[in-house]
Image (tube, rainbow, N blue to C red; front, side, top):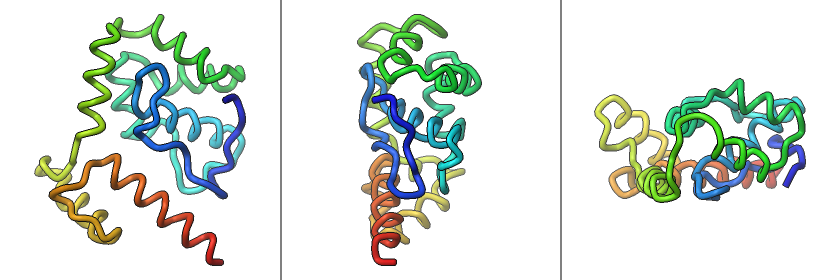
Length: 149
């Protein structure tokens, strides 16, 4: 998929949608492409969420932005990511993605209050909700509201 997303009309891919085994990557690329096109809406590329992936792989948002500017496809970016930054085995990527997908900021004293508020506004139980689930619910709520108007 090498299309520019208009995130003013629909949400990016789920943080759980994997590319090359990496969670967050598909969402990150959607946000980056939309940002370059001036159609990111309320979404932000190179945000703290994206930095979780960038930190794991030892790459930067600027490096990914350059690839997006060059029009690289999802698969070309996966290949680049596998060849650059901190080397990771397939098993390490799988374990990292599983840990990301099960992560809940509720367990972090610095993020607990924020996460609880976000979850409650979405009708979710913060004690039983992962970050990925919260982001998906927020995406659904945001675009359901747009569909009504």
